[in-house]
Length: 445
Image (cartoon, rainbow, N blue to C red):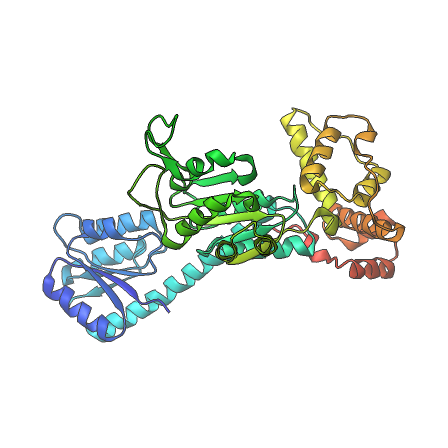
């Protein structure tokens, strides 16, 4: 339940009386003598109500209402008026004010109007939050493509973790999209407007690792010309993505652990600590605890990094996503190359895509799709079958045919039956076996 109230009135006695009434009734009250001060300190999406006198020196209550309406048309504003100001206050309600109270007013009258305004404000904010969540889901679905259960679960986990101030460890094979997931955790969270710094720990020479992460002062070592800000310091307020974290030298693991624990770092050659606010997202292919048992990774750092863990399934475990991903990568490549369309896939080519094990995962698939978009011969996507049995390959192909028909006809069953030449009962049985629902393919406004 919302209970925040801002009171703006140039008369100290009115401010004091209203504060006492509201505080005794359990409200959180903030007082201002000037409308200008209220505007300067009003937080965005203020979760409450503004009560303002109409006649004040400088900016009056009507001007304040106009400015507040420009910032947030749904913010309830209750005006306090003298007897001669009632017609003006009625006009202000037509222009967006929630209510007006004529002085002198009783505490009961004020509390009644305030509670109704707060109820309205709560509904507005809840509705906004629902719309915002729906928008985030749509954006994330367009970024992390896939309809498999694993991808749907991953998107839910990303949305849950994006707003939490916790470090995340991403487990996945090479090419499975670990950096893209890390970027989503950053872009869909409160640090989105701060830096996102990605580092591949396996690509940094050990001799340069400390300077790269922590920076250095002038003359800290031979060749250190001038002061240099390290990647961790540069990312202050944002997110650091450490790919292939298992490759980080043990000496630097100890220093990273200190940064995580104390939120401070020191440049090479410096004695002064620098405070940093960082979210660490690390990615690895092997299990870090296995690495720790083998003496190649610090166990305490592994636990610090793995506050939450996301596992990215390899492409061979979510074959139903292959056609959608292939189509997306081929279309993107065609647009980049200035081509209006891509060559259509034959049934045999699609079956080969579904049968391949894709050891390079999404990265390998994107490469195959780009070659296809170039219009190279069909052998460019005739990949060798993986370990699927014939029945498994047929099931995967059937699922894709059903999904394509449902998408083509926007969930209209009669059209799907005609396209696939299937009776209703057989179609229903196949959709049920593959976990397909027509509602998922209906276009909504």
